[in-house]
Amino acid sequence: MKPSNSESSRSSVSESGLSFWDHLDELRSALLKSLCAWLAATVAAFCCKEWLFAFLMRPLNGQQLINIDVTAPFVTHIQVSLCIGFVLALPLIVWWLYGFVAPALYRNEKRYSVIFLLTSVLLFAAGVALNYLLIFPLSFRFLSMYEVSPYVVNQISLSSYISLLLVLSIMMGLLFEVPVLTWLLSRLGVLRSEHLKRYRGHVLVAILIIAAVITPTGDPFTLMLVTTPVYLLYELSILIIC
Image (tube, rainbow, N blue to C red; front, top):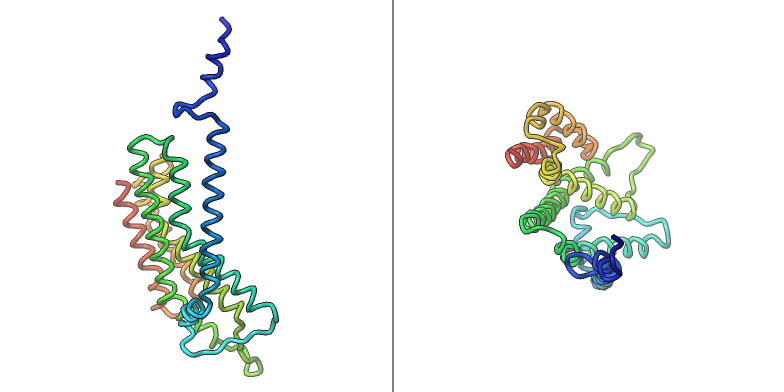
């Protein structure tokens, strides 16, 4: 029997009473609000130039940078403002995107998703903080003082300094997401605690290699400074998914 027009129209509407186009409008609204929040936070960060760069230059410990490109200070100012603006607007962005996804989740899924998001943000922030306070100052001091020849004088540019700081911050933040990633893979049935226990040695070697790449200082103290917290987070991952 051919379904009536009313039945077919009801079938095109979701359980929440919204059609596909209604959901698309909600997603567009969430993305638009997120973009506006990012731009507003970027403008606010841009206007706080003195405080912002005083904070970023603190690891220099009095060392001077140079600039050889006439556009570099302005471009760097915009890039840093965009990054800081995104970080400042991230809680609102996550909240609005979660509000879009939440109606499609079950009650227990909502609880897990909130824990997942909060833990991800906190761990990423912890990795960035560790990099800013310890990893980056030690790495920068080593790299800026490293000489290949007495005929080569190291003069660090502004763009090089900011790029290294941002890259190391992102990498350390991502490394600290190990427990969240393993928990998510375990929920999807991809990982089990037995797998993590079996490959402890392999993971430790991999973390040591990554730490050596991130911190090219060569001293065991800095290497252990990166390796220890990341490996402890790996062990925490085993306890979480058991």
